[in-house]
Length: 83
Image (cartoon, rainbow, N blue to C red; front, top):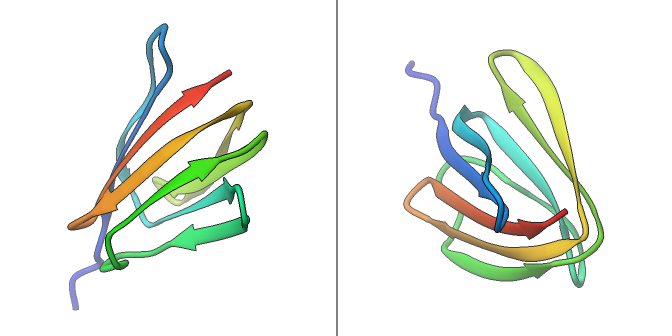
């Protein structure tokens, strides 16, 4: 069985913060934290002050944000944030 992956891009107005393959992403949504796994339904959501955590290369990583937006579609996750 092939391990499914997500393609994650996190950008700020200044630069690209992360770009690569991940297994899951947890986001600080305006209505509460939520996790995106492979084959997640399409969604666009606002993000609030908090931490984005994700599993990449077998380890958990995190990025602190002050807000932003996320779009999930076809296992592609695009996140635009303020830091």
